[in-house]
Length: 419
Image 1: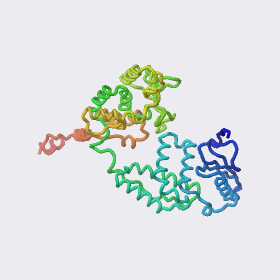
Image 2: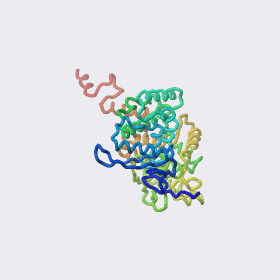
Image 3: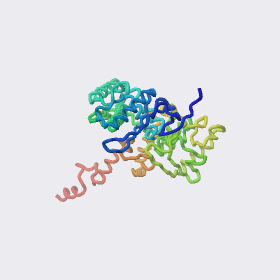
Image 4: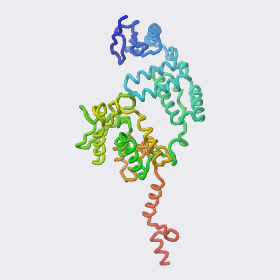
């Protein structure tokens, strides 16, 4: 049997000839259906185009004909046949990937995992137009039980809720359903979870010097990478794809310019944008330029030196997401830190250090790439010493000395003396 020569049409790779009228076999599996019909209510031509992942050609053809007949006859929405919520979710997911709404490998993995493990098993068999608010309440209750059992954090489950809300909103719009069954479904409270005073996942300025010195001693290959992370507050995903040479380098040691404009999460797949869609041009101080130049000079001959990447793996490709996990854990134990320090500590520590250095918030965000002030605060940990110093400054500004009896203001002391 001759191998199929796929063609790309309508944002999908399909067979060159239809299996049935308006039905094309897809390279990735399933079928793409496409047809047009005149809507008698408006006299305009309406198009039907769907990706059906788990149907054969005959079923796909029948579904297409039903959709076209619905348009031609002006059948009321409530009488339209509905597909299962699981099939709709898979179709919408596929469309978002094809249309570029979900770009990164991490985004695809996240959506795929949530659908497969946390949404479709319970809600997938229900027809889209048969979903009720009670189904969502039952689903949320089951998810809440998993939180109570310690299987998942509230923030994780809230991510599932976000995806489910996107799905039901899209279903309401596409099938003109009378209401969204997710209305009134709230996220779980996260106030008792996350970072604490005991586990801030951040280094103080006293701890950071020793941390980096020990990292350089034990894992010199990661020292320059960590320095950029701690001193710029950038996500590791924006540092891994940085290029030092090639047609479009991101780092120029002569000018000290560093361009943050790409993101890599998994494998060698790189997005030509960042998570926040913000492109940054940062001029590094001489100290950081020197650290990076020394790092490049120490790259061993072979794939690492030949690679265009600033921080290549041993094979010359991108470093893995977990490359810093063990080094950071070993270092924090070596210097006697009781709290956990993960790669996210680089971004959190930068916020705290910048604030301690009295760097203006707008400048801090311009360096770290935070899109909003809210996210900047989310990654910050205000130490007790900062609070104490701030209160002391307010007291001084008010003209009150803690050493005076009763803490009287200067003018009040004069009046008291005159009396």
